Image 1 (cartoon, rainbow, N blue to C red):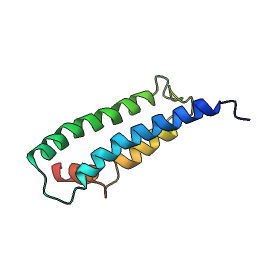
Image 2 (cartoon, helix red, strand yellow; image 1 turned 90 degrees about the vertical axis):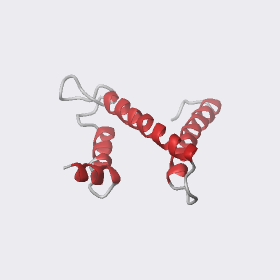
Image 3 (cartoon, one colour; image 1 turned 90 degrees about the horizontal axis):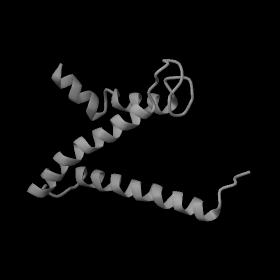
Image 4 (cartoon, one colour; image 1 turned 180 degrees about the horizontal axis):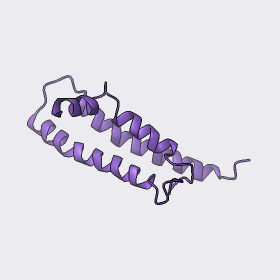
Length: 104
């Protein structure tokens, strides 16, 4: 049985939605159909390193000192979070993969 109060559940829901809204703004900029303004380009150049930092921090949270168990979720390493990030970043059909292939 869930012991979380409805107020706490609502707070977590609002927090999650707020984070998704921030990510949506970055995605909307990238998918903008109109020509980019100089401000759009400046924002995109600034948001890419910020998003990479987010990914690096999540990876660091799900790393391991023992090479056996994730330091964060206490699962066998690599944990599900680390495996999913690896799958998405290393996907050869995604832009990360294409970028790496161009540099090779």
